[in-house]
Length: 244
Image: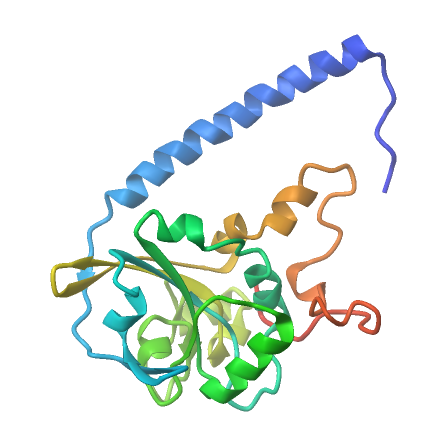
């Protein structure tokens, strides 16, 4: 990395003010997009999904924990894996205290396909406190396009079908695990699906990057080059996760 050019304080202030105008443009555009996101139509969830939590079988409605809104992070954890995806682990490391979401009538939960016992063991090892549910044996991950298998359901990831993914060189998403986040809201007894986001659309949740973006050195590593946080003394790279 090249050290930034050293200038006088006055020159720096002028350059900083020019950048500030660009930053304000982004803030205004983000506010516009956020407003449009709130105006998206919704789709009624018709299936009565059964997932597994610490007390056994739970329905999607139970995952709201009595609140109006539910955010579900689709964490890449294949049933055959012994550890979760390193990129997803980096992201959930950035969740923070959930009390602030709860005070806004919103629950945040994580769902993966690995068996619940495997998830619970890994969560304990990593020191996480968020609710984590297993969708093993359920259509949940396939229906919300966080897992793809052409033998189970038509392939779709980030709103691209298998042909488009292949043409763009994203063959890793045609079969297997992908990360994403889905948003649900309750309307009486109905559950509505309002939003899902995948790929780099989840970077807004990654405060490690948000902090590093403020520094001269920048991000330094791609998301799948960060190891699990308890392996920094031994790991040289991250895991083999497909996060594009």
